Length: 152
Ligand code: DQA
Image (cartoon, rainbow, N blue to C red; front, side):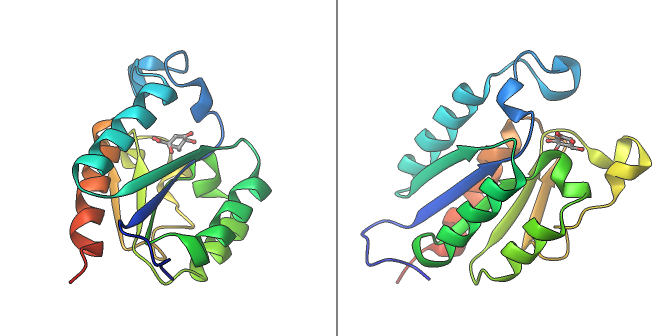
């Protein structure tokens, strides 16, 4: 589960189209770019004495392979599967192999949107979910994870 590292390590995964944040429907998703969000995530993790690795892909298989790495190398996973939330049995199955806290994050409140977004293949596999707080949701997730993985 966790390497013999000094600090807990968190894997943060972003799904398809989140590389376009800043340009993508800013009224829904905000004006921050993914690089800016990742920088805030890493700063927050560092402040809480953790490490964070952030990874984005538009490809389901690439996200699945990162989750395989998490089995050995990470103490928690924060994931915004984006559109794959509503479709991906493969991401769900990969998450089922993990024995660490999993936080599902959505920038928007998926329950205020189209009904197909109300279905999440991840929700009942995740430890908890944050939705509707914009980029602040990632920071809330990092703060929550810090409490969950505290050692000693
Ligand atoms: C999203 C919500 C999904 O329905 C959508 O497909 C996304 C982003 C969110 O962060 O609000 O790409 O996960």
